[in-house]
Length: 176
Image (cartoon, rainbow, N blue to C red; front, side):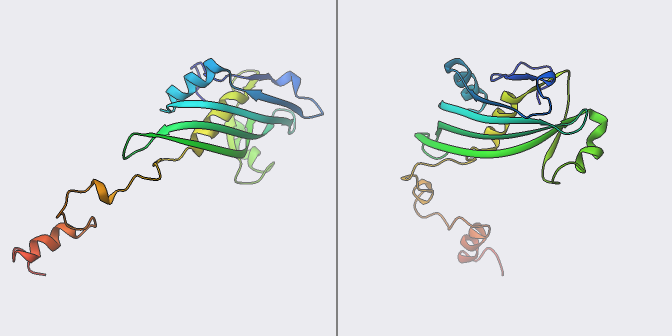
């Protein structure tokens, strides 16, 4: 989790605050934090990022983070570069523990829960939410009017792996 680098959305929860009862908190990114995250994730804007987190102790030195987040943002269309509004909501779990305890952590939770090594005496739940949000962003945002076929020059062969060969075959340059 970005060890050594300052997070744009840092919300440290001291491990001492996580006792017999789960630690719960709602977090929201400020204007400045959203602007910094938009730059980090190559967004035009990040209009909202909120999360509800719950941190539970799992034994003496293991902690389970369960979080639900919502975000509203604007990206650039990969074809036209026009703004594309988007919204995502997600839920995730991470298990934190000493670096050498990853094998032990597997027995405490479902296999699908990722392990994060503990660094120091706090967990940055804000950075965890920021990273999970980034994983939920559309990889190739497009405006509804963006059309890949319209971007091809007229008369070009069909855009498939053998399109160029088909054009050569028509000129007698390739024997198939």
